[in-house]
Amino acid sequence: MSRIVLATLNAKYIHASLGLRCLAANMDLHGGPGLRAQTTLREFVIQQRPAQIVEELLSLSPEVIGFGVYIWNVVETTQVVRLLKALRPDIKLVLGGPEVSHETNEQDICRLADHVITGWGDVSFPKLCRALLDGPQPLMKVIAGEQPPLEALALPYREYTDKDLARRLLYVEASRGCPFKCEFCLSALDKTAWAFELDRFMAEMALLYERGARNFKFVDRTFNLKVDFSVRILQFFLGKLQAGGERTGAPPELFVHFEVVPDSLPDRLKALIAQFPAGSLQFEVGIQSFNPEVQQRISRRQDNLKTADNLRWLVSESQAHVHADLIFGLPGETLASFAEGFDQLHALAPHEIQFGILKRLRGTPIARHTDEFAMVYDPQTPYTILQNSTVDFATMQRIQRFARYWDLVANSGRFAAALHLLLAPGSAFQNFLGFSDWLWRSTGKTHEFALEKLVDLLFEHLTAVRGLPAEDVRAALLADYVASGARARPACLAALLDANRATAPLVAGDTRTERQARHLKQSGASSSSLQRSEIQKAAAAA
Image (cartoon, rainbow, N blue to C red; front, side, top):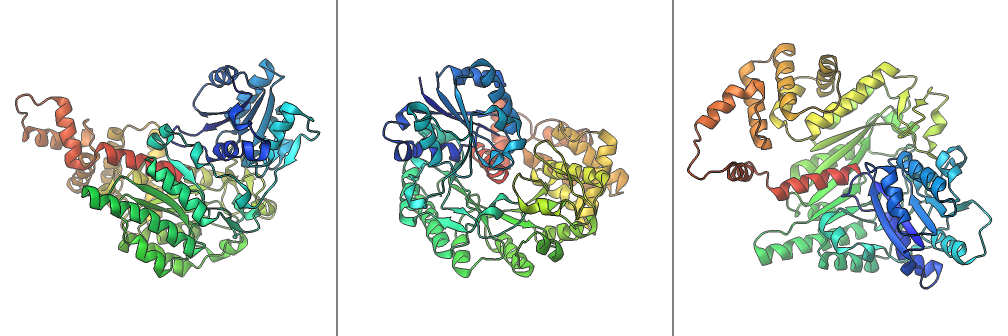
């Protein structure tokens, strides 16, 4: 039995909620002694049935349930809250998180709940729980969260279990807030960025590492804002890598993800970044747009020349995995100007281009452009732009499909050789848009493509539509397919695969499992590298 349950629905199991653990860590400090012992954490995933989630929650016999609500889980969480209120109206339901911190009067989930905490909950949630359990009962339904100085907060990292450390991506924060005012982002509402006391934070990182943590995602919006802090943090992780290499002859499994300001990369940071081995460091670089007029319109300060120079350096002089973000649908951005920016970014050769469509997050200042640029958003989550004054609905749908197919083909990493043929010569954007339009006309699908089917579709497009020599296309697709470790038989590669297998006869006792293991080893697709790839994608997507 737990009188208080902290719950959320994650997008995937690999994500571990930092928000819940921040609340749990502060229950005693700000709610009074003994409150943490009465509190249980429960994490679910959005794929679970609401009735199953409700059954588990009710089995704990709670008096208060707090839900972390985000853009990716608000629909499913609303279903859970509705069921709970129907079954047990006596249980107090408290909501918090960015999705319910703004426009609360317009949301069904807020109407169903007993209380909503907007903004920070570290202090306000424990205080509210104490009042709900022991009185006096709070008078207000919507409570503006207190924002204390960071030194007044207990850090959450000891709330991560050993199971979390072994199996999940750990979210950490060296700072909160952001000094920039990009209008599509909720951080535009922050007055500045606040840093946690560095010695205290680093001590917690050291303890996590000693306990076995190896996968860290920093959620700081501007990791490289304070260079002295950034240097100290990079030195810590680099020291762990180097010490591990000296002991074992090879660097330990360690992965660290940071979001960086793209036009600020001082030499002190470069000197450290250059020493990290491949697979250990990932940077999310928010470009969003290379169009100066659009940047100014949305209050985004960015030196495009420095940004390009820094990206070029990261790709050519370091072994960091570089994930660059673009947003389509910003006010005043045309298809032509976005295509120009996409091609500019593609020429800089980041490992992935995350092609996002503008979303109107609740509370963000981007709403001020709605009338002037005829911005029409989907009223359902995730509130994606449907059309505006420069991009009509039909074009927006084309770009939605482009983004999906780009993830399948380009960001999957499975088609390195074929992608070169697909994107050249000329405009990479226009070449891929042509493929995207053709793929939609040919299949009517954006999901559920088997790898083998995608190989055959690429072959058909590159030969029949683009007119490339079949021999060249087959050679590229064969190299990609073999490197992927797949074992099926795409029609366009059947003869080549049969010939390759015929030249590698089985030896006595050579089982299918042994052959597959050997193939994976030869292709570099070890279980650890596959897991690292999953972690990289989870870090970039979260």
